Length: 392
Image 1 (cartoon, rainbow, N blue to C red):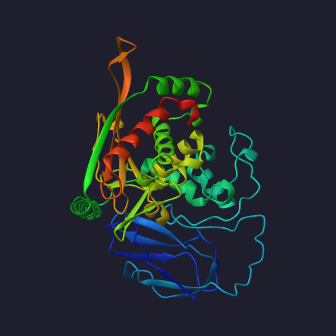
Image 2: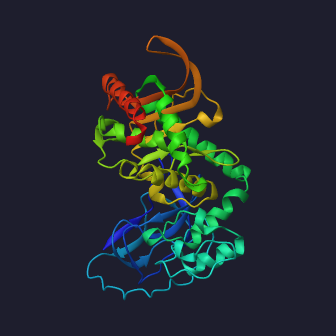
Image 3: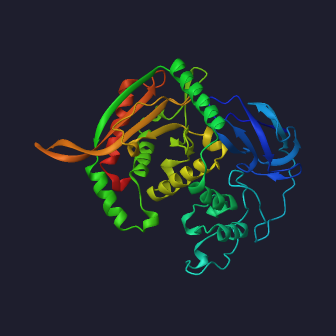
């Protein structure tokens, strides 16, 4: 028997309110399954299990406020009786975008609206297809989060909610600001911050990006943000101590690269969900993953693991017209990379002064885990990768 406990969905979280259960006693669960929805200061978050088993007992009922670490449910992890194979057609699913109920296995495509491409190009559950028709959502523009990349009902409703999402209520905004303030104050109080900065010539990177995007469809084009995330992920392999956590007075480096991405929410507030395994994805997959993450963050459809798994954070304020940023580390992480805008500046190249697109980059690092020499090597590794964009 194993206890499924209220997770910490951020360094500032002390408790959460259970909104609803998505699984019931007797239901079999697999690692990564979403089992409940929890309300926090930063919104409604889906939470997953991290082991296989069968729900034995639900200890907490919807509406209860539960401290971090308290048992929510009990899971039987031994002697599991395998469930029968699911039918080819996924079951009906109901719920909101915030609930994010998985829609099951992908099913054969159904006929689509006139003017749409052949339906065989899209893997989606029947419920997702029906809802897409009702909402006028183009399935081709959605990144699926279901099995084998299938589009779920939650994916459709999340995409529809992005453009129409209302600003958070004033009390929610205030609660979020208090949570951010507490986390940042704790970080500055407890972490010995140090900083290194550099200016990167982006001539090769931007030229390659223009040429690459000419070969891609409009829907599949890349933004500089995807290149920056890949460059950071690659540089981690050279300086692995920037990627991990400071726990129990020692560095715990992570073998995986989950990059927390700072996202500004509509109506105010900031959240930094993680894009998983950036080092293992190609640029196109990073771009699609980033777009999906931003959309779900702003529509309230994030998963708990996306708020807890970050191993290093990137904050990119270039689209705000900012030249550079020195960020505050998000504990228990040990480093944060900051990027400003790409802007033309005078640059000396082979003895000539010419206008070049340049980028200001910084690294905020925990001096207990990383020294200045290694921090400098990390930024140099980021720059080196941006000079060879075709290899990202």
